[in-house]
Each structure stands twice: as structure tokens, then as C-alpha cells.
View 1 (cartoon, rainbow, N blue to C red):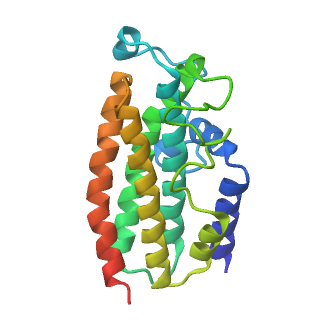
View 2 (view 1 turned 90 degrees about the horizontal axis):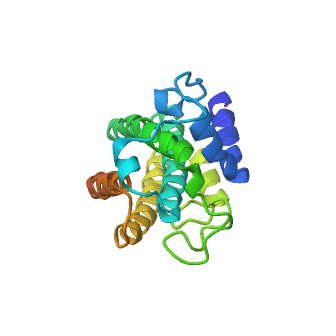
Length: 218
């Protein structure tokens, strides 16, 4: 009962205060491997990398970083919620653990770029381009689960939990792929290109595992 309450609180906060997701991802130690631990190495100013110095950072680059932080934080929350449930199938648990570790690593780079690229942040939500329609806090991004979808997952026991987890990830991956494709169609920063291409590879690999989880659910 306590585990379920913790999961409900975590996901409620993430949905009700979507803008706080970026702040938490930047300020907390998610990227250090444990949610809620402070990251003493993160300062308010991050030195420019060599690629950043050679290539200008655009609003689209910043938009990508901001959007991907939301996607990764949400994905991490989903994985951790599944891991807290009882009786979950071993394959799904292993997949969730891998996602959590991967997202923690990805958020390290994203948090650093979010800080050092702040000057490129647009003053208003973009009306066109790859992030058009995301809203002021990216909560309306393609593939982001609704409150009712998240609540259904939090409440679901095995094996319904595995099915809901896989379905949410499938939809979110589709949203990430759509964003990444639009970003790569432009002229992104070299660091964004590398990150975006990695997202495409991960999404393709995840798709097979997600299909396997859905196929195994009664």
C-alpha cells in the first residue's frame, strides 16, 4: 500500500507540475544514478564544449534538449514505478532497470546542455518548427501519457502493469522519434545530432522488447 502511495505521489507531481520536471532533472541527482540526491558537480555555469564553441546553438537545439529532458524524466519515472510493483515478470523488470540506468546517463548530458545553452532559449513557445504545439512547458508533446493513463498504470497489478507500461513506452517512443526526425531534418548542433541519432537507435531496439512484453501478456 505504501509503495503504491509513493508511486501515485511521484507521478501526480510529474503531471500536475510538468514544468518542474526540467528543474528537477537539472538540479537533482537523477543523472548521478539516484533520484533525489544532489549533484555537487553541477554548477550554475557550464563551460562550453569544443563542439559548442565551433557551432552556434539555436532555439531548436535548446527545444530538443528541453523536450528530451521531459521524455527521459517521464520514462525514468515509469521504469521506477514498475520496479516498485510486486510480482512483475522478470523480463519486464530487467527492461525497466536498463531504461532507468540509460536515462540517468542521458540526463547527465541533457542537464549540462540545458544550463550552458540557456541563452538560446526562446522567449515564447515556438509557433512553428519541431517544438510547435508543445505548450509552454512541453506537457503537450506527442506521446506523453495523460493523467488517466498514468493513474491506470499506477493502479495496475501484474500482468496488466506490464501491458500498460509497454503501451505507454510505445507511444512515448513514437513521440520521441517524431521529434528527433524533425530535428534532424534541420541543421542541429553536432551534440544534438549525436544525441538524436542515439535516440533513434534506442527506440528501434526498445520496440522489439516492447513488442515482446505485449506479446507475452495474457
